[in-house]
Image (cartoon, rainbow, N blue to C red; front, top):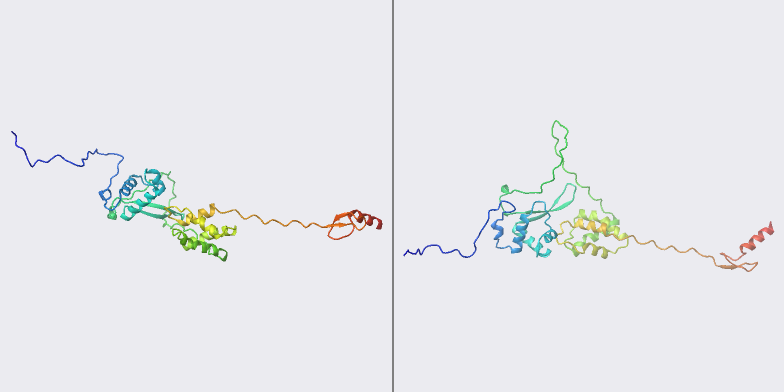
Length: 276
């Protein structure tokens, strides 16, 4: 009879991994993310989904809601805030050479890693046909991109509009505008006021239905001021022309219109002919 080994390992219990080696369509996820003690499961799942996307894809709240099932825009916004707080995601605004601002989202697979070991992946631009460059004896120093011209200073005509814009943050804290933005938007608000719009109506239009991921409030306000401007007030009706009262002719007693009593046209003509 064979002896029993009491110290032999027992059958494995619990989780068993049966993995296949992946050679395509996979993404490497750190256990720092997959087993993060402070992140909820929706936030971890959303981070995994974002890290699996190619560079250059839009990852706004509405875009993510359209790509994922079972997650509302409110849940996605809460999950993004969790990932930002944990350092797995950063959302900023990047200024383009033409002065426009665009949102930029950076996904980190290991927050706090050595910057020298970070490898950033961006969208690959479409190849362009090479253009011949003139030969120059020495490379000219690069010049910085021109800045957009500063808005004109405010005049007394735009004082009410500037006051309205500065007060928007009291009704919607996300509409905090810089002094430069106020100078740029004031003429548009002045156009509304000059067309008869009341300040409360302008304020309600600018503050209504603000998006959850509002990154550049001045751009949204500029679009609404241009797209939703009311039509000009109709011209005031002109007074009708004055009508002469009726008079009775002194000769034939015929009724006719004239500013003062006298002869009608017929009697006046007869009197002129007789005098001639």
